[in-house]
Image (cartoon, rainbow over the protein chains, first blue to last red):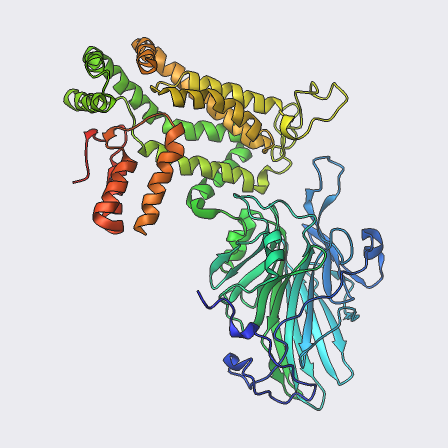
Length: 564
Length: 69
């Protein structure tokens, strides 16, 4: 546990331009001639000057990016990818709203960008450096190379290539035509504001994320990172960046398997709600006439499970974990697959959720049926049971023991045991998580007034569904779905066959109405699932009671006994 | 480790078990059984015993008085 800060991150002396090998073994692990460079990319003093988005994107120093799924531009000032919109996703549920903007230039309110560059002899290239581009447009067919030659004759090049999804490959190379050897460290960084980030939830992480040494690293929200200042995760970086509920921007050094020599792969917070994810490669000495090349990939796009898994299969370690599946990944993946398949079949995501609920409840049905069957068998021993209850009225403990003994002698038991519940908990939690994590649900309509299943129910009861001219917010924003949830849950408890003690009865009487308030702000798709599940429970209980009519009476008697 | 597992079992008793409908087929309950088994046999053996108990605690399993041996 003491190895939180790999020595590479410890500040090392900066070697002057002469490029003389320093005594400090900064890059000794590289096996190359020992060279010294910068240990980190350093902090930033002041927040940049504010600009609006339109002005920032209007400049002439830009090379357009256009692919089937992504549009935007490369900023030649600072070799930044700071303009990316996702063509397949709309900003809002309105059909005429523009595409989602993921990356935006520095100084705009929604700034979020990747920057590529070099540290030469310990000095980082200034961010206002203007690069020369060799092409007019970055498309999957036409890569673009940016070049810059410094006064000494060292030529820096960054070749950008983009695939048909969300991955940009940046090949950074240096050709040394100067008379002296150069000490070169390519770097890449992602910088963003947290002001437009999604909320960090228990089931869906939002904030700095990465895979280091093969292990997912995502313990901090932006707020926590701001308190810590800087965090250097342990292990060699497979990929690192920032995630929102549905979006990800991440740097993948080298092959994505951690086979890279880096001096710094870390996260830091900067003044003004800004955060940076740094990737600084280890220094290599480039002799006169020599060349050095480094590949880095930049993912900037939507967290579609299939797309992420494709990149993972392509060699990026645990890239699929960018979606915070958590412990129940092996329940969640099949559920997501089923949900997608059902959606493909019926063409409406709300109906797909209902069908999925029906299927899962169907799988659980035999358990409930068996429970009822044994309850019916119980009926036969009811008289003996009563006798015991009478006899040990004042000794609850003894009464319990005797009942257990009776169950054993008569080989009956009305209770289904805890295993079915223990199994159901991860399944339903997984279903819940899938509904939160699945980008497939975003902007999917159901029926009537529900146009986006991933957003809270837009209708509110207190202003009569928008008829009264005021906005309902916060605690009282109860929609029809939430009310249905409360009602159906109350019904399921009403029909619950189990005998309860008074405390439990009170809890059960209150819970539906409490949950109605708790669940109201959640995604409509979740409420739809829950309401469906409740209705199915009621249907199941009614059906089973109709098959075993004697139980209804027995249940009432038992309830009375428990109360008394 | 042992303490952690006992804590989980206690957490179950005080949390979900309180609000879920009673479902114990056995006496003592699975969580009580787990706490006793962990205390008596340690994390590894006790944990395994508790797991086996949980695995037979379903509508097709046994029931009745089943204390930690």
